[in-house]
Length: 70
Image (tube, rainbow, N blue to C red; front, side):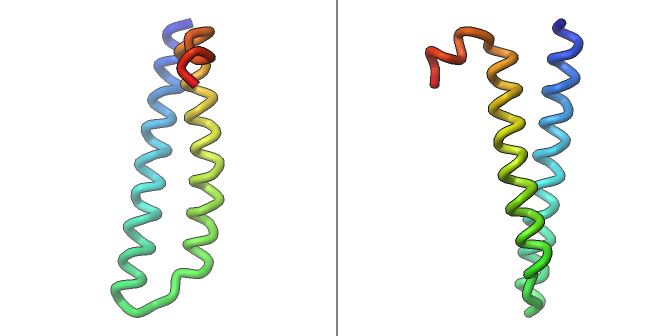
């Protein structure tokens, strides 16, 4: 069970790094005077889903204790 959870936590870490790169690209586009319409929409959707996956992973890691902390 712990191997599965470690793998899931590693996936969430990688996904947060992807979100970070999304953000940097949007900032870069804005700094160069371009409007990141498509990129910003994609990043917002990705981030919304990522937050849900992180919460789900946290619930799995903490188990019943997660209910007490939320």
